Image (cartoon, rainbow, N blue to C red):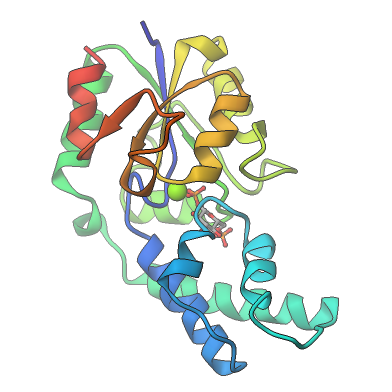
Length: 211
Ligand code: B16
Ligand code: MG
């Protein structure tokens, strides 16, 4: 039924979500703001500046745009330091195996990520040439839950929206994919959302649904 599969990056292909958490936690601690895993879950799929706004909700101080810019840069520097330690070994074997099988079965593949670091991450994982198209935070004006990143990925694959299946771990991503008119396979946090067509216990479950 599907001709293309559009993958979210953080939380689906790799677990950079733990590095986002560490970097935001570090920033929050340095400015004395409360931050925990629950707040972190709200940042999944959301752009860097919008993430910062969510974190600053826990503060009663008003920060200037310049300060916010500095906070976001500081977080990103720390995040990139963590990314630097990543290698192909951080790619789950099941993920690579499944991607290879889906390719063999003739599916076109895309990345649809809110991250401006997506290409850096994919090259660390040695996956940069694997996808037919990569659409990331540098290519879009509106981040998830907007549909832009998914629509661009679908167009890049040369497919209609209803020919694409999106794989997402975040509520914001599931919403964006639905707005684009695409069906969704949910994994992790997004597994049990009501808008999701396929519930993936683990990444290799995709092999069952995409024959
Ligand atoms: P950056 P995804 C998203 O990636 C992350 O889930 C989200 O936590 C992050 O804030 C966003 O990318 C922006 O990332 O700061 O690297 O530009 O899940 O859409 O692949
Ligand atoms: Mg994600």
